Image 1 (cartoon, one colour):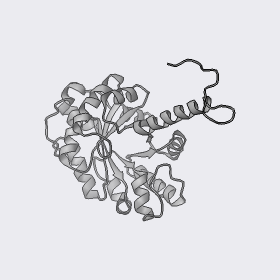
Image 2 (image 1 turned 135 degrees about the vertical axis):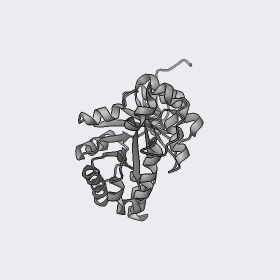
Image 3 (image 1 turned 30 degrees about the vertical axis):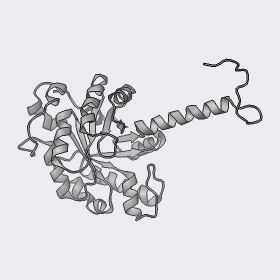
Amino acid sequence: MIRNKLKQAWAEGRPTLNGWLSIGNPFTAEIMAAQGYDSLTIDVQHGALDYSALLPMFQAMRASGVVPLARVPWLEPGIVMKALDAGAFGVICPMVNTAAQAAEFVSCLRYPPLGQRSFGPTRASFSAGDNYAAEANDEFLGFAMIETATAMENLDAIAATPGLDGIYVGPADLTLSLAKGRLAPGFDREEPEMIEALQTILAACRRHDIRAALHCGTPGYAARAIGWGFDMTTVSGDSRLLAAAASASVKAFREATSGEDGKPGTPGVTGGY
């Protein structure tokens, strides 16, 4: 079976960069997969896509060798197992608030005797290589998302869940919950209380020898998180990157075609397209 490159990188002490896919399109996934990310996560929770887009996006990503991950909509065994059957090498599960929920999530990831995953890897039996049934339990990753005040209260018990590979921090929802509406949701938190929360999560991961991942908005903040000790950071995503690049291009054009008086104009241009 194909080895999980994220596990290999972490074993060698190297942090990894994860990309985020919210646009349900194989071509977009293929483009993102060619940019040098260590892994790409298809967002089935908030992304503009469902399972019918998930599988062909995984197919489009395969040639690059990037590690394919998926964030499922919720803790529901069916979609967790289908994401793995489609070819995911790891699953991120949102809104895990208790150790019991973390244990249920882990059980969906593993074949017996380690879990309750049903056997039927329709695409994965081809895309992941030979000996899938015997090796899948050791290669796949499960990340529980910590996003609420309740999850923070149960953090140590969640992190101690046998078979859980890591915690993925969703800073937007975590901010909403911890700040009780005082702070707007968003990435790259600078508030002391939120920095403290991130450090608390990181410490829990270290105590229980699991991986810590953080969703970030900018490369600079992601680098800070790696400096703190996070093993994986996500920097922006396809929709935000597309919007940012398009906005920068339009701005550059407007500035380049403005007259000296600041009014629209195209000095020196006499022809059309």
